[in-house]
Image 1 (cartoon, rainbow, N blue to C red):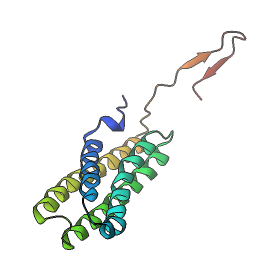
Image 2 (image 1 turned 120 degrees about the vertical axis):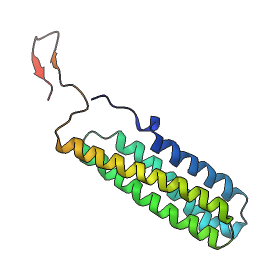
Image 3 (image 1 turned 60 degrees about the horizontal axis):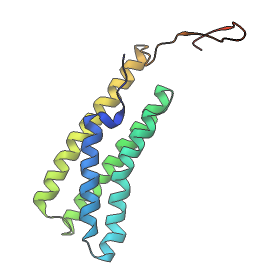
Image 4 (image 1 turned 30 degrees about the vertical axis):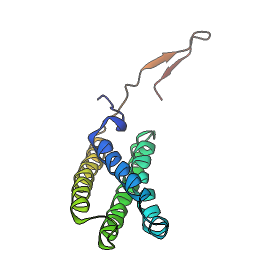
Length: 145
């Protein structure tokens, strides 16, 4: 089984799009709105991909899953802040609906990723081949542990 870096997956790209939108949108808000809703929104959506990358870099599946689940929580928090921004007239309804649609698609992909990693773990799938390594000077052989 070949491993594709998380940064190359559609789930990452969708969350990155939303993150870019949030950053650019919040820039135009008044100071009070930036420091209340804006900072929370940007932190939450930026946290999604940060946790996906960190989870993807972990050695064990359990460790990876823990970060992917944290990312899912941050995505849900982002949804709350987008809805709140729309209700407080910081984001127009059509933009909010568009962004929430992307967020929903991204969250579905994230759930599929989590399910896939869980199933792969249960099936005993290993990402990398364990090979026998031989050290040159002593001739000691170490079997992939």
